Amino acid sequence: MNPRMGTLNGSDHPDRSNRSLQSTARTDALGLGARRTKTRWALLVIVVAAVTWSLRGTGVSLSTLITGWAGAKDLASGLFPPQLDEELLRSVGAAVVETLQISIAALFFGTILGIGLAVTMAGNMGAPTWLAVGARFTATVLRSVPELLWALLFVAIVGLGPAAGVYAISLHGTGLLAKLVSEQLEAVDPGPVEAMRVTGASRAAVGAFSIIPQSRSDIASLVLYQWECNIRSSAIIGFVGAGGIGQALGISMRLFRYQELATLMIALLLLVLIVDQTSRILRRRMGAATARAGKGLWGIYKC
Image 1 (cartoon, rainbow, N blue to C red):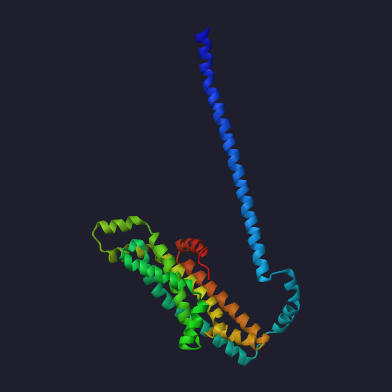
Image 2 (image 1 turned 60 degrees about the vertical axis):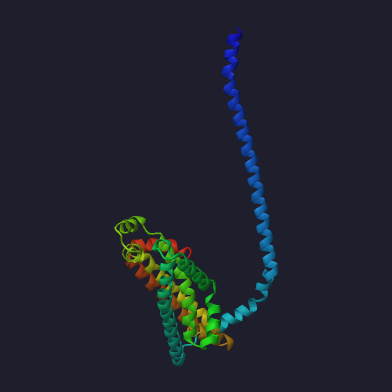
């Protein structure tokens, strides 16, 4: 009898162990769920407190919008109808052409300098460590300073006009393109790269005939995106005297010429739409690979 009872007790032992483990697992899951709930509530409280603090500190409220509604109506009524006399249209056309020239010139310098830094920064291009670190630091500094601040500096250095705008947009675009192009170079398929290295090809040859050809479509897409950004940036930096249609916008606003301002705003809108559409068509003609790259890159490539 005792052996038989011993056998029964022995067979029950795994069941008790399983029940104990399941109970422990349930307890742990409940504890983890409680901790996650507390964490979520704590994050919610922090977010609410930060938003409330920011709104109070900046004076944002519904009352300020209601107070400024009368001024907004006066401004909106002053914009219509836009001024369309021949002399103004010629002036607006010249400002649009100048804006386009600023964007293209800045794109030229930014692309050359940016790709040069990107080739030096990319880890698979084989540049010396000290040179790659220096290039990465330079690109970080250039893109960390906004175009508006660069424009203020160059207006003080070279004076008012489009040249200051070209230099300002070029430097910021250089830093941005250097970062994104270097990432595209590092993301290429390593197979062909290693195959060329095994054959004894030099670093320059590997870069020129394996790495860059694989990423040239993505790089072209990035350059076109930068052109779109240059158009928008040239309108902003014009407010500090760096030429283009932005400078004309700033003058019209300061002199309260709202009908003239409306004409300039329409011209800027048309210019941006035309450049965006042109850029989109060019990217589409580069193939499906570029379109896919553009979709992913646009999430981080903001003007």
